[in-house]
Each structure stands twice: as C-alpha cells, then as structure tokens.
Image (cartoon, rainbow, N blue to C red):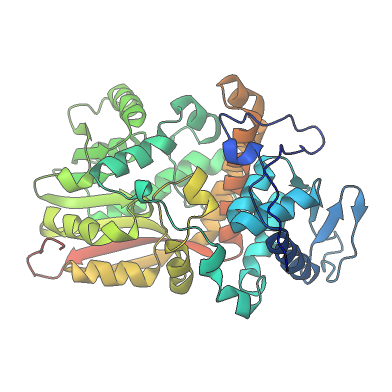
Length: 436
C-alpha cells in the first residue's frame, strides 16, 4: 500500500471564527502532517466510539441519530463538527492534543461543552479498543525535556501560567483571588457564597496544620496571598514562597492592605531552597506542578522543613493510579498549553512518596463535587468577561483555549475522573534523607 503524506495547509475556521495567528499559535494555525492511513484509522475509531455514547454528533447542520437518549428528555449534548476532515486529521496526528487544538482552531463546538467532555471522560476507558490502547506509545508524544522541573525549568513553567496577567485572573476568580477548590456550605454553589467557601477551605487547612498564635508557618505556593493573610490573622508568623513574580507583587500589596506585613514574608524562592524549621507547612494544589521526577525532593523538603511535633497540610488534585501512569508518559494538551511540567498525582503516589520521606498521613478527605462547582463558577465568569479578556490582549484562540481548559477540568470532576483531597501529614520520627 502506498501512503501519501499531505503537506500542511491553512485551517479553514468554523462559522464566525476568525483566522488563527500563525506566529502566536503555529500548531493551531496549520494542520499537522498525518498520513492518509493514520487519519482514516483515527476517523474510524472516533466515529465508532462516538456512536456508542449519549452524544448528538452534527456535521455542519446535519445531526446524527442518538443511540442513547438522555433519560431526562432534554436530549444529550451536541458536538458540532465544522470541519470533520481537519478534526480527524489532527486526532490522527496528535491524539488528544489534536482534539484540543481543533477546538482552539474553531473546527468543532458544542451547545454544552462541559456535557460533551463529561460524557467523554466518563467513558474514557471505552473510547479506544483494547488492541489499539496497547499501541499508545506509537502515537502519543513524549513530554519534552524542556518541561522538566529543574530549578530553572520549574521557574519557567510556573511563569508560563501564573505570570500571564494578574488582571486576567481577577476577572474570573472570587474577590479573595484564590485559585484552588473552594469548600461550599451547600451544593449547587452560588457566586454569592464563593468567597466564604474559599475561606472555609483555607480555615480547614489551617486547622489541620494547627495554625494559631506564634505558629511558625511555611506556605509553599503563595498564590495572591489570601492564605498567608488568613494565617497571620490567627497570629501565625508566615513565610510564603512563590516562583511567580507577578503573583508576589500583587500578594505583597494585598498583604499590606490587610495590615499583615509584620507577620508575613513573601519570597521569590523554590521550595527546594527554603531553609529552617516550621511548626506548620501548607501547600495548596502545588504538588501538581512538581512533576513525578521531583516528588521525592518535594516530600523530602516537607519533612526536612518540619519542626518536631509539626504538621503538614496539603490540598491536592488526584487521579486513579493507572491513569496517572499513562499521563506521566504522555505529552498532553494540558501539559502543552496550560500547565507545562505538571502531573496530577494518585493517592497511591502521595502515600508512597510521603512515606519514603518519613511522613505519615493522619487525615485524608475528598471533596471533588466542590471542585466541579468551583470550576463552573470560574468558567461562567470567564466566558461572561470575554470582551474584557480580549481587551487585555488575549486573542480568540486564547479565550477558546481557556474555556476548554476550565470545561475540561470541570468535566474531570463531574465524571469522577479527578478528585481533590485535603491531607495532614506528620513526621514518623526518622530523620529525613535527601533524595538520590
């Protein structure tokens, strides 16, 4: 069989989608190279998989039949393919990276983006036939070495996400500027309860760590300073470290406005470079940015920094262990465009790595439903502020990328593919050893 390799060509955008800037988004603006055979296989696999799911697939204006109507009678979500040929070619070349880039290019849309992604996440193990799953390595891209979280690499990776713009984050986060899951009093959540829910989350972590008057507290991952301010209001003396220059600048202003400057120090520093001993060490959804290669260094640092009788309080997104192992070997759309160098750990990985460092888990609580609602509120705010996001200089491709990122994450929690947990860890009495 002779297989031809088509040359790259400009992407035809879907209705109402302007063309893509090839300098800013080179892999979105042009279709990837993919053989006719590979594209045909991708199309067959995708069409077969989608036909079994409770989705309505629409090519242009012609909907397909729905094999499993929704029991509510409202009908399943619709996935509309504006350019089926480009959609299948991207998936044939780049798998799920191509799926995301196709959305960024405007080649597909949905009347319920979270609904479509939740269906896909719920049935993720059934989408690709088992024989083809064994060939994952033949089409999945390896993570690039430049994304490894060395001291320099970690700084670059953090800045690529968190230094985008403080004004951007302020458009969709709650007034506390807290960029992690809230804990709501009741579900479904309301925007009026958002700030109180973020404070409830922070207070639970401070309680787990035993933070109070005179506590020497270390926070790894400053964010925009809300946890540090709240810890200081309890009388704790706080050192908080970050790799984001923009976050530090705004956190310092917010800490000063709260009158907490005398109790909070903010340093631009990697967690591996922190010295001293602390009664409480807190890290909220920062382990996901560490990378599996550096989890031993991370947990060893936590143990090394913990004073006798001290406590560590962590909040971490988690996923099932086998899925984590597959993700760790793969360059994903999220790692390419949103969180370079990141990897969500499994509960088993956290337990294993923390135990190896001399830490024992004494509390573990999950609340994934609350993260789904947190993400829904962020996504709705982000979409409502689309014009303001554009006014900050972020083009339509960026806005579609971030809408997909927020919807993709929300779907992960709604489908139970992801969870989020709060953990307390204490030293088991052994002196920590530096990882090899």
